[in-house]
Every structure is written in structure tokens, then in C-alpha cells.
Amino acid sequence: MCFPAARPRFADLTGILLSLTCLIHCLALPLIILLAPALSRWIALPEGVHAAILLLAVPAALVAMHDGWKRHRRIAPGLAAAMGLGLLAAGLAAHEGWIAVADPAAADRLLTSFGALGLAGAHLANWRLRHRGVN
Figure 1 (cartoon, rainbow, N blue to C red):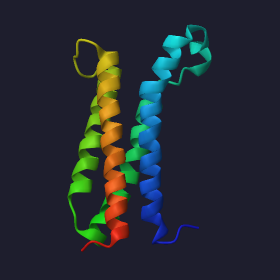
Figure 2 (figure 1 turned 30 degrees about the vertical axis):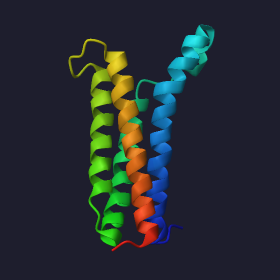
Figure 3 (figure 1 turned 135 degrees about the vertical axis):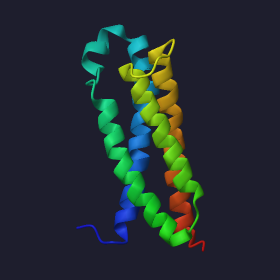
Figure 4 (figure 1 turned 90 degrees about the horizontal axis):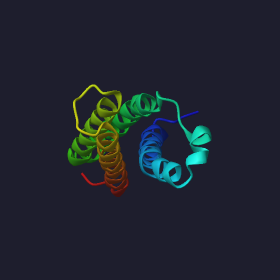
């Protein structure tokens, strides 16, 4: 059972975990695949993983940032989260070919990596501000 006070903490933890999942997927997985091409058949993730992570990250960020704002009244974590989510969405768009870029795979990795880092940073900042009790 999620108590009201635990829900935003869970949302921040979920957001951080999803951001780290993005980084692992975007940075470590291609490196592993480059180093061990024979393993790529077993390591490959389904095509929908980008959209699934984004669909999980958006509500986690909304819940966490809304509760954080109610408590500490700082807008910076919410803006950073919105920017991170925007970069994740742009990475998905590059991956799916919805935007024209010279190298879709590189654009996907770059945009998604920066988006994941920005979103993780936003969740960490939100967490710190909420637990410091800044008003």
C-alpha cells in the first residue's frame, strides 16, 4: 500500500530508475553489442522499449514534480524534468524516423542520453529540495 507521503518518493525513485535504464540502454548496450557482435541476438531489446520507458517516465515525473513543487515551491526541478522528457521524446522521434537527422542512431543515443541525465538530475534535485524542507 502506498501512503500519500510515500507516493512522491516512489515517483522520484521510479524516475531515477527509468532514467538510469535509458542510460544503460543507450550507452552500455551499444558498447556491449560493439564488443561482442555474436551476443547481439540475445541482448537486443524490443523496438517498443523507447516508447515504453517514455510512457512510464512521464507520469512518474508529473507526480514527483507536482508534489515537490507543492512542498518546496521551486520550479527548477520541474523545468529540468520537462526538458529531460522533451529530449527523451526527441530521441524517440529520431529513433523512429519521425524527424529528419543525418544519423538517426547517433541522434537517438545523444538526445536520449542527455534527456535521461537531465531527468535523473531533476528527480535528484526535487528529492533533495523536498527532504530539506526548503520553503
